[in-house]
Image (cartoon, rainbow, N blue to C red; front, side, top):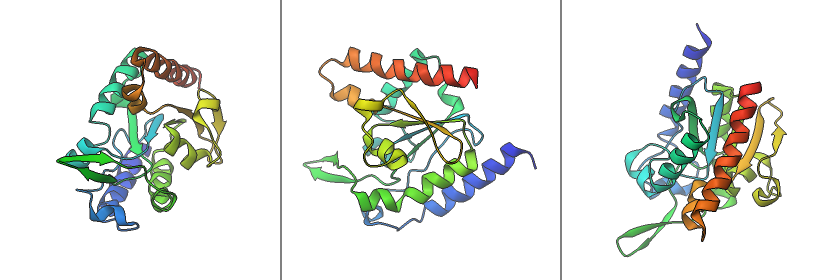
Length: 201
């Protein structure tokens, strides 16, 4: 069986199993598991923190406001989103109510650890050349709890699997920034580093 077909089958099996995941309590309040999506043989995987309100309702990663920022950044960096596998370190939306709004809450260490097997299995199936971590939660899940995006963003680190990992800010940080143009430019710059690494791989 061709490598891509094998990878597709592996990812679909993971997605089907993850749909019933109850490894932590987040599933109780989430609408659904939001698993990774994209080509099963993608050269680039991007991993964020967790699905947000839009993702939880629609069942797809990076379709809300932060996803639209990511779309802009990828386009500016000349990376085709359709060729990227997108996922999150945590697969269920953690939130608290505020009136009619569901406000994002930061996942804790136990919740992040509970989902580790999912994204590790995704990487094992897809076998990308580069893993781009979006934000501190994803970067620390992959590169260790002492990792600081502000200190080491834009640098490559070799994982035991042979995958090259790099970290940058989460697109949602652009939305929170006082200077959104500067924050977006910084994100685009880091993605250009990713693009150039893939071009020379």
